[in-house]
Picture 1 (cartoon, rainbow, N blue to C red):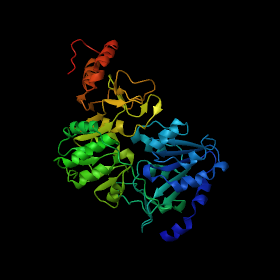
Picture 2: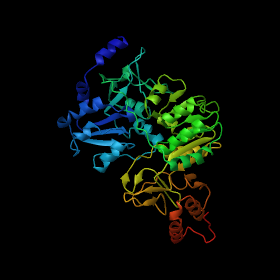
Picture 3: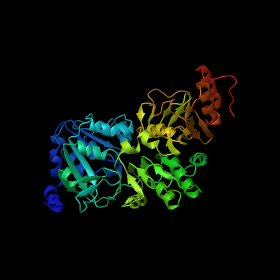
Picture 4: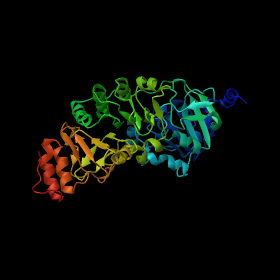
Length: 447
């Protein structure tokens, strides 16, 4: 049988395909901007026939239909491994759950059988002449969920770029049970995030720390975008990329000649990533581009792989940092804001890299709902706050007031350093609280 004949034999409507889902099943959606509206809507239409169906995804950027038709969770339970703004709002209404993780370990959840997958619903590119569908912009854990699934449904979308990879970036038709031709809806584009003066101040500090030939990882948000913009305008040479997420600013840096990857120790001249989210500028850049290589997350985020590239520069955001050096990057108290993602992986791996540095970046303050400034350098993390990076792992912390390195520092030294980059309005109170916690010496000085 030819691949074309097999394609036609497996081609069904979305409603027909999702009939394979049974009550009690675990269903795995695609990830990030590769999440399917079509298959999600078809499954939602079966609400009254199903109970206790667990649906798992990673960073779905829209509220799924299965949640909207079942807000009381009588039929579907929705789990997101790394919250989007949509998931955060659903979680606030008790309609979404989070699964704690160390990102590079997730594929082992599936290979070791910790997480069952009864049905995988995966958005893909059009099939090529060799019978392969491409995973598009999201590799991460998708290939492992497909291999673990009892049934695999692919939704073909002709707007999905065909991305090159290291391995497992394609699904062969022989692995597929049902094929659905979707609505060819273009991939979701991320809105532009305004860059503030504080973001630019922090970016200047970071860019001054990046050497020629450095290998960079940027997290998500305005501050990493500001860093990418400054790098594109800099005279830095032969930067490499080994990152979790690929965003538009990498395109700008590449086209400006900052990124060549020539000095990388592994995957030279390749921009290595595990998923991409951005605008059409990024998606068009990725399409069949040999400069880019998409790998599964147990490769991109493995600290011992990360460490193999010299001068690894990991740049990530935080919500709060306490005076002990504990970093909270995913919750505000007990309220889940986002997920762990690869922050721990990259901070740990970059420290192991020869000449590597790992930066935790944050503005010194945030404005509260009452218009008052709130310090993001705090005495202790509030009740329920999640420690994303333990104090023993934290190294560089950066605000608009400077950069400090906590490695090898005693508790009183950490307190002094962190207070020195806090907003001046809060320093005296932070010193008072540090003294009450016995992590302050009279000889400490704050510049």
